Length: 311
Image (cartoon, rainbow, N blue to C red):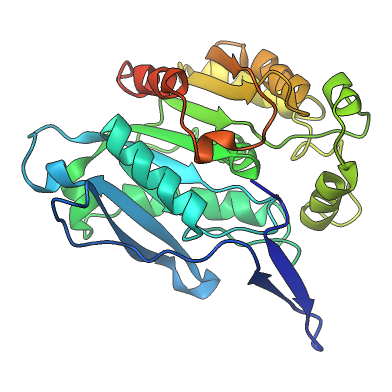
């Protein structure tokens, strides 16, 4: 995914309006039909923050295909924390396909974007989403089809960073919601010193650097723990997860020639402290390629994790 899929318009009052320039919006499809293997609908989460989520449920579940509830995957879209939307067609199509292929319920929450809302605003929104899901007795789809004891946090790019940081913050959430693991798809991390893969790959760093400049707290650099979890309190946070006995299963998905592959390896190594970490690195260098071409090995890796976990 490009981190520049929107243009920002500076308004006279100092606010910024993000205008989509690349990807069209896609409406939800709540009505089941033979041509629609997955249904979706939009739900308001926090009206004051204008946050919402799109739910995806396999049509077979609505038609009584199984009495068992399905794993719930909470998926955060990418976009460098400054662009993107739940209803952009690559994000919608990805969740739609993953819900079908994995036979799982997907929830794709929105979150407030930088630079108007800098981090940790998106992380706080992510925790709000989980609290809403945990207490969502009034939503029939979640109540009837989602197994809240088997909830995974997943994200692509900055969404992978978000899934990681929301996971840390949500570790103390109590039943009925239980998070047995994370799925970090090419997560967006950084650091002041360029890692080897960043140096060796011909990529205009000004794009990713600009995203960090827009989303990190004012005055922070790329060695802030939001960007670089290997510094500051990041290692202590992972030790805390181990002490909590969460027994997380985590998969870090990346591409061997991706500019951030060394960052992905560093995060996998960091989390390998009482956490069951799987590195799933395939050939290639295109960021977010699985959004349009899901490899069977990647699907199998995710499937094995969400169906092998239990509270």
